[in-house]
Length: 345
Image: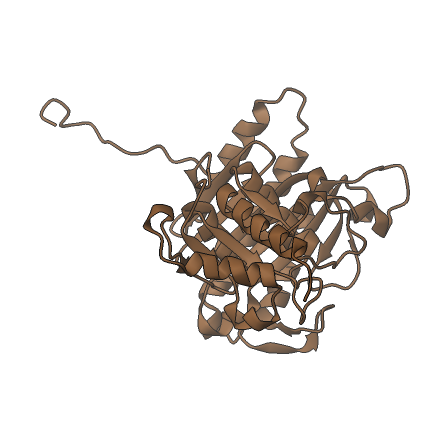
């Protein structure tokens, strides 16, 4: 650039905190409490990311001698992530209770005076920890229904449609935080050199159609007929529809959905004869990631009903889920519906 020898060209960097504050300032009368809550989660994510990256040299890998509410062995890093997120959420006195995969009941915070309820999976994909494969954290935020009444577990049993914010943090080749407040999806990447999440994508849109399917095919024989037929459909050679699809499965819902968000396709964790109600948790895995995907233009269903319309009956309820690009999910629903209508025998 001969006429611009002394100019330095550099993309403007926006940190998570700056972005949240700017977004808040667009709404006159905003109290800033939700913004503070998102910043608190961002801080906890930085601490968890640091420990994930050095876990192998600090003796933090491996199992504790305990199980979580689902009967799964708890890993040291699971418990560390749980403690960090709860600590961060209790700091600002705006969260009244937390529901975590690692705790059986509700965890009451700040003298029960806060206005927000937070669901979280502190470390999604724990089976990947010891083999250095991607893991994540997932969170979902609701308003407390009535701040004048005594706090009860029932206050937390709201449909996903009532989420005011949701997001995830992915600890992989880089640490990425994605979130929505109902106004689109933003992605931030952690720059470890300055310790800040930097805006990387401001309005993420999932492709309308993708050629990737993601499922634990080791459970194929336990699936219902409609899903089996759909997976075979994905494997058929058809250049017009970009088939056969690629099969990708990480074993961490946050990671699989993150890839689906960016590249399109479908992630599936169905019900089966082995898990009649599915295995993934409605409130702190399926609802928040469904909110993200819907805000990006995709769909999320249990095969018959929109995930975010399911009325929860318990804190740790499970559900089947099919989530991803609009056309892929609609095609899957066709196969399930046709199978349901086929007479037995």
